[in-house]
Length: 281
Image 1 (cartoon, rainbow, N blue to C red):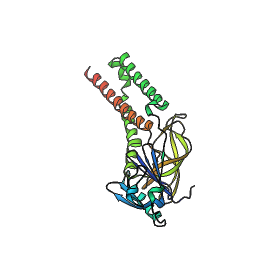
Image 2: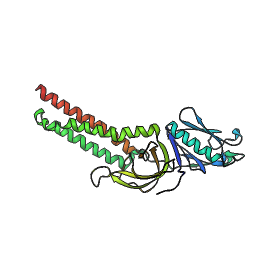
Image 3: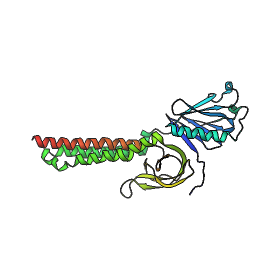
Image 4: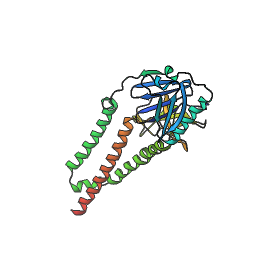
C-alpha cells in the first residue's frame, strides 16, 4: 500500500485541468500545457464560484506564453477548490517566490486526439445498438399483437435497465461531481462489467486520499472497453465515502449510459403499448 501522504491533486472543469504535486502547477487547456514551478507562484485564493485564483510573482506586465498575470482555474465543487488552494498555500509557506515567476513558466503542446466517432470503440458500440434495434423491428414485423404477448416482459426489463443506469452510473457520477476530490492514482487491474469475458471492464483503482489514507482495489464507476493498461490515472473520489471513486469519464461510458436509459425507456414503453393493444382488442 502507498504511504505517500501528499498525492498529486487535480481540479478540472469546462475542458480545463490543473494539477499540483507540491513542486509545480500544471495547467492544461485544449492542447496547451503550462508547467509553473511553485517558486513562480505568489499567492492562491478562492475566486467567485468554485474556482482557484493563482497569481504569479513579478511584474504583471511581464505575463508570457499565453498566460495572464493571474490564473482562474475552475473546479468541480467548492470542496476540491479549497483543498487545492490549501495545498498550494502550504507549500508556498516554505518556498520564497522568485523575483520574476513569469520567466520560469514552460509551455508545451500535446498531440491532437482522434475524434471519438472515428475510433474502433465507437464502431463496436454502433454495431451492438444496431443489432438490438434490428431484433426489435423483426419482432414487431413478424408477430401480431397476440404473438407479441410473449414479449410482455419488456416493461419490467426496460424498467430494470433504466434503474441500473440511474443507480449505478448517473447517481454516483452526480455525487462525485458535487463533492468529489481528484488525485493522481493507479490502475491496478480490472473487473468484467458483465458475464465472464465481457469486453466492458471496470478499472480497479489505488490512490491516497487527502487525509493520507491509502485505498486499493476500488472499482471505478466509469467502465472502459477491454482491459485498461495499468499505470497512473486521475482518480476522483468521495471524501465522505472513499469507496466511491472513478477514473476520468470516457465517451464509451457516457454513450453506454445514454443507450441503457434510451433502450430501457423504449422497452418499457413497448411493453405497455403491447398490453394496451391486448386490452383493447
